Structure formats: C-alpha cells, structure tokens
Length: 157
Image (cartoon, rainbow, N blue to C red; front, side, top):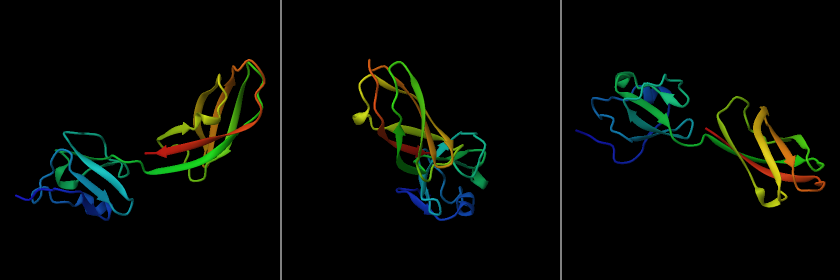
C-alpha cells in the first residue's frame, strides 16, 4: 500500500477529483496542494459538506468517505482607511480602498491599533464593495479626535 508522507501537488481541480483512492487511500490530515490556485487542502474523513470546488472538493471515488477542505488563506491584502475627525461621543462611517478585496468573500479583517487613540473604538469592519473596506469608529476619548489613517489587513479564505 502506498501512503502520502508529504503534501502532494495536484495542478488542477480535475486532477484532485480524479485522485485514485484505491491506489493511495486518503488518510486523516493528508495534505494536497492545488497548484492552479496555490491553495492547501486537508483530507477530513467523514465530512459531508457539499462541495463548492473552491474551498470544499469532493474526490470522485471517495465522496462517501470525506472531503478535501481548504486550510490556508486564499489571499492577504493590505491598505489604509482614513478615519475622519470625530467629536467625542460620536460614531463615523469611514471607507478606504484595499485593492484586491472581494465583496461576498469569507474574510477576517484586522487593523493596526498602534495609531488608534486610546478610547477610540472600531465598532465594526466589513467589505462594503469590491476593493473597499468600511469601518465604523466611535470616539470615547473625552475630546475631539483628528483625522488619521488606520492600516487594515484583510485575510480572505
């Protein structure tokens, strides 16, 4: 019996679907690399999530046995959002360009708090349109806050 001891590179989606589970049986936590997308997938035995051919792949001869599930971020993009001057006790909606961000994608948004004034809070962060991040910021500093830039990182899964 052959076994995988390191990640296996499979260039295309068709190639992943055509893997031969009899020749090399899938084992828990096997890793494949989808070369065309430069994305890692882990074999999860018993998983029945519907395949979407993007983050969940159904291997044709192993559909009843489990799924290949994406395990790595698809894309990481960075940009800045200019936070407008905000009076104490007020909230403001601010948008900024982060090139490459896709609306509707599954994302995690983080921001660098090193230049965020004390008691100035990011209430929400979302992708409001392709290439656009929206932040709702509330000023509880006790005074007016001047305009500043907030660096943003978006991780797309």
